[in-house]
Image (tube, rainbow, N blue to C red; front, side, top):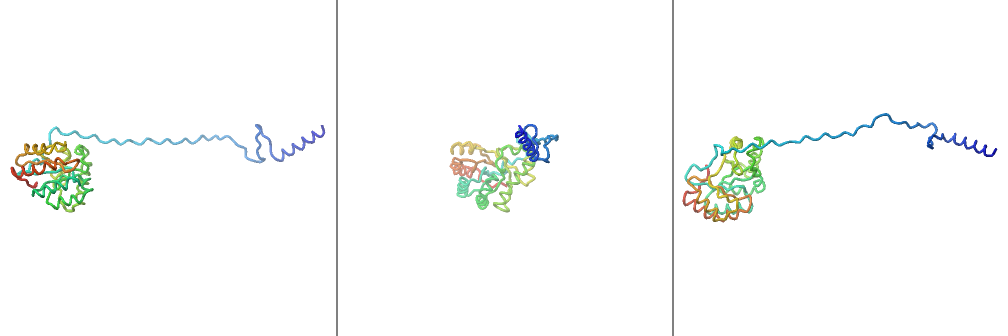
Length: 261
C-alpha cells in the first residue's frame, strides 16, 4: 500500500510538470491559449450576378414593292451585263476571258470578303475596263433590314476592301443581295456615293439551270436598255460560263452591249 501511494504521488508530480489533463482526454500544454468557439459568422460566398443578355433589334419588314430610285435599265438602247457574288478564282478569270474575246465590258458586283481574299482579280477587272459594284461584305440577304449603323458599316467595309485592292478605283454602284431593298439601304448607299443597281432580266442562273435554259431566258427577257443579272461567284458557275458565248453574241447583235453610266 505504501509503495502504491508513493507511485501515485510521483505520477501526480509528473503530470503537473508536463501539463494538465482536460476533460475528454485532450492534453494541452501548460500556459497555452485555450481554444474558443468562434462567434463570427462565416463570410458568405458571393454569388455572381447573371450577365445581361443582349438582344438584337428585330429586323424591319421588307416593303411590299421595290422602293423608288433603283437603277433598272441602262437608259440607252444597248444592254448591260452584270456579274454577282465574285470574285471567284475558279470562274471570274474565265468570264473575263470571254468578255475580252467578245470585246465587251461588264459590271462586277463583288462581295467584300471575296475582294479581300482575291485582290489580284479585282485589279484585273479594273485593268480590263470593267466596272465595280459593292455587293455587301458577305452577301447578307437581310442586310437592308438591319439597323442603319450596321448597313453603313457593312458597305463601308466592302468599299475599303475594294480600294485596298485597287486604290482610287471608283465604286459607282451598290447592289443589295437578293434584290431585297429597303429605303434605309438606298439612303446609305446614296450617302456613300453609290447608285442602287437592280436589274430587269434574271435567268436565275443561281438555281443551276442548263446553259441552254440560261441563254433562252436572257434572249426572251431582254429589251432595249436591259440590265442582265448573271453570276461569276457563289457556287458552281459552269452553266453560266457555257451560256455566255451565245447570249453575249445574241445581245450584241440585237441591241449592243455597253458600260453602265
